[in-house]
Image 1: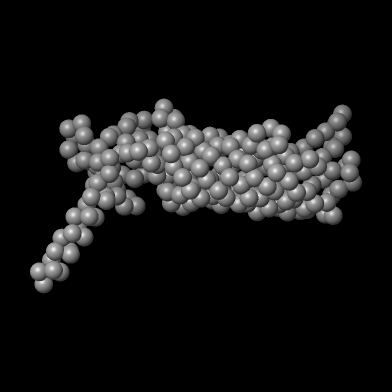
Image 2: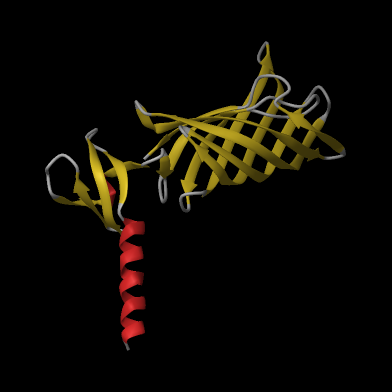
Length: 224
């Protein structure tokens, strides 16, 4: 029994050390609270203030972002909306896309990209592209205000190109590496750039290559 009590005590002590992390909590109101996190669940965060406010109970719905000591971030269950634009491979159909991103946990996220583009000449439609993609990303390194990540995407598109006499649906598959940057003054804004490979098939036409060859791949998102 003595050894059991010692093991239980050590388990509780180690759990307390693990939970109590120095952090800066950014609220939706714009206020920032600093201290040590004592506990956190889906509903409430308990923070021991380092400014003499005592123990604070904060509703998770009121929290915009948590910055841990060492610049570690936790965007779990946060949504991001923004814009995604990347360089294209020659002969590839591509348009700028709206982005709706959701963080499953502190490292994994899913992203829905939706884009539509139309080119006309004197009122005559030359090309029309509808693009829909689903992406998964995983952060593999956090350093300072940067996240280094890898990911992949699958998508479908519909192309109507009068010049090349194409009126077809197709698919696209991509794999990529990227970096997302956060700034202390704008903790809920992420700016990212990527490089990768893509394979696009529309009808009998297949395009494969490294993207980020023209206009740099760039996305900007605001996290709620």
